[in-house]
Amino acid sequence: MHPCVSIIIICWNSKEYLPRCLSALSTQTYRDFEVILIDNGSTDESTVRLLEDYPYIDLRLERFETNQGFAVANNIGARLARGRWLALLNSDAFPQPDWLEQLLQAAENNPEFSFFASRQLQAQNPELLDGAGDAYHLSGFAWRQYFGYPADQFGLAPREVFSACAAAALYSREAFLQADGFDEDFFSYYEDVDLSFRLRLQGFRCLYVPDAVVQHVGSASVGARSDFSLYHWQRNLTWSFIQNMPSALLWRALPSHILANVVFQILFTLRGHGVVFWKAKADALRGLSLALRKRRKIQNESKIDAAKLLSAMECGFLQPYLQNYNIRKFLRLE
Image 1: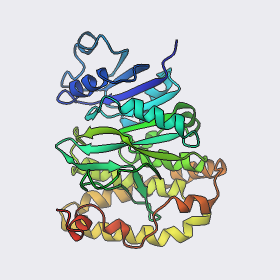
Image 2: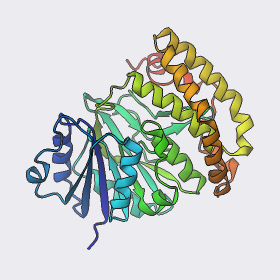
Image 3: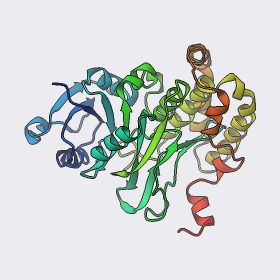
């Protein structure tokens, strides 16, 4: 018999965190799941003896010779999956025992939603949130809601959000495949926001589930502030904006998108990352023709009214610039 849920974990040099992740899965109160673990070309023996060490998990291990990227690996995992639901979990995310149970309960109680975001706490400091679902701004920039805010004060109620952070999220497998999964040209970073945008265009909705809790390290493999993460984030957000923003909103959104890029170019230049930022944008422009071809297909298949989509976005003029550290200081939260 097929399991109800297929949990997909992509690991790349995750030896430090993967055992804790799998140990957390072994204590889940909901048991009807399989784990598809894809070793994305690790060189640190991340997956040696895992099948022997976790005999009580229905674990399937696939190894790649080279790093295929987060997007490709998850798409392969989705095709291998047998469950009705896909639970994506980062190797540096550690779910509480009822994490999967809470997600499935939310799915059963809210059939109008097709994908679900977890409540993420910072693994190094669980008193602070790592995210409570993702927000998407009209400018094309996205952020994790309440990142760095006190966990006992924020993100306590279920609510509809634009996107689910794929570090710990649940998707209808049917919806995931209908939206063609992750864009494999992204390699990694922003691929979950892009997927959520396309799911939105197909008419699917996302619910944040505050009782589904994980602790998350975040960018454990490459570093949260590395040139690698900055490059892929900035290149991919431009592609996602071009491919997904409906024509009815594009001209309204374009000035905001250009302004945000200028502001962040100045910011990252002052921080010594200007060269990486410019390279990301230059490569985004080089891929413009491919992005426009994808756009035609995506927009032709869109099923949602532009006004309804806009209502799920953030539109405040200053919002992209007041996230995280600056706004927390303004609110005297640290």
